[in-house]
Length: 401
Image (cartoon, rainbow, N blue to C red; front, side):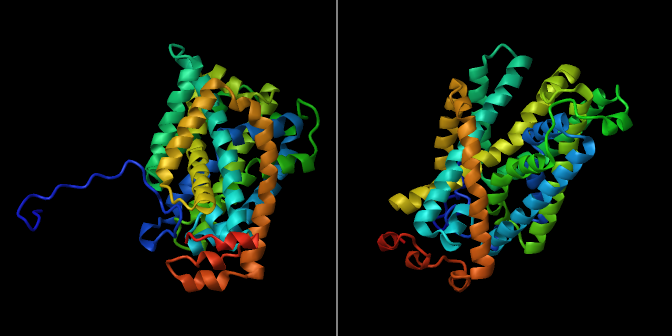
């Protein structure tokens, strides 16, 4: 196609870093079908951490006790995810942006964004280190620290292109991960009687039902709270319900129960080592895929939270891709240095702050409804800063929009 001057038009290259509507609503034209988003949701909940959670339950609980703990924990996660997810699809906004109009105001949303950013960049680095350990055992010609860098940089590069690139990744890694987990589990379990595994006593110290349910719900509560980061790309509330029920239910039962059975079979909660030793390089691939398909969401949501924090505190609207790049590089370097492993306990404690965030969001949006009219009246735009429920009041006087 020629330009008006007669010269051939120069095609515009796609940007390397995509902002992905970090501070505004996702338009209807950019939404996806429910099953596409459901693949990503299942990829989140069926990660390696879920496999290890199932093994932890199986090591201390009978099969049926673990089954009901997974069931009750899944119901809790589904209720939270569905309610905050519906807010996301209705408003087209990510979690930290939504909190501006759901009880936290500008200052509160900045703190929420910072908490999300700190928590998820920490887990991003830790899981990069986990994958690096597996890669080093398979390909020892690179040291573990270098594998940490390479893995972290790879995930960061994928997330730079935003939701579309992450969808492409999930379409490949999720089915491959499920097939490989199924195969590696069957290889180990074929030596045992299924009925005996279901009936036998747990091999480790007793784990109570309440404690087990708490582990299940707490293990993914951060993922539930950041559900709007994903559901803002859905088209309807019904889509949110379908993908949440399907993704969380399958994730808990397929991956979680596989971990329970393996723990009963090999009488240890360290089933990752068992899989890697029993199926060789396939076990390493399971390990890498299991961290890859959740680590992209760790760095993605972390970037969204920090973008909101910078916008509120400094009045600067930074590109999400740029923030993601900086945080991904920093997280990868810290993982290579082994520093982030020292912060696992801190990150676990930080996760305690997220359930109240979800409760406040749900109560304000669906019951109190202080700012629902403002959000509805704004249409594709957002309500003015002075109407977003700023707390404390002096914050409302900031001049940036």
